[in-house]
Length: 105
Length: 161
Figure 1 (spheres, rainbow over the protein chains, first blue to last red):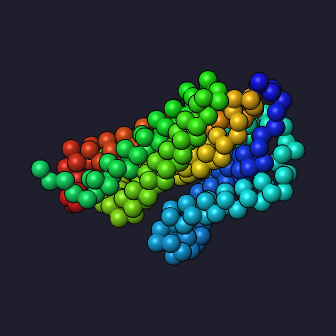
Figure 2: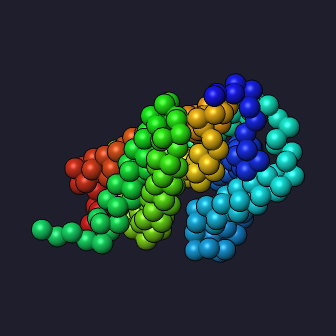
């Protein structure tokens, strides 16, 4: 049995959306802290180094958003193919965006 | 032979990165042929990918904070400053992509892939994204390594650690 239009599980759908949002958020945070030094300094003061703080923030955003979206079942209403496309697009935009940002900055 | 803690930590970082990428390849191949018989293996491989990425995060983070500043100074004075300004800067932030995806992989693999085509597609896509981003990061690591090497070959003053 292989259901073509089957939905993703609650956790899978919620955390997929959370992952895509976190990846985009992480990219924006990388660019903003690079351009706005006070934020970089603040993040350095939180957990030894801005990169460490950045990682912890990403994990907290992913975990927190994932739990909220899984329980609210909001992501369940999105067609699985759209969710997959959104996640893939987020990764491509983030990866290319980071490279272009540091190439131009 | 003089192997320092910096060497061990750096090599552990890249080795776990490779293992995490290979575990994602394993998930991808198993998910291509998802059946009830290999459902357990897919979940185990997904967890291995996640644990390896966590290990590479810890080792890489420790090395980056404690040992990289000396290498960065060398790279910036050498003929390949872009090894830091472009490749390291991109790599250190790009790393969060496979990290988050590897956290998600065991969650996606918990669905019944053998009876849900969309769950299977999700796992295939996530595993492939981890592999591609992992390979890009390994490649960036090689450029950074070469940035230090060419700086040393050009006799950058003060390049001793």
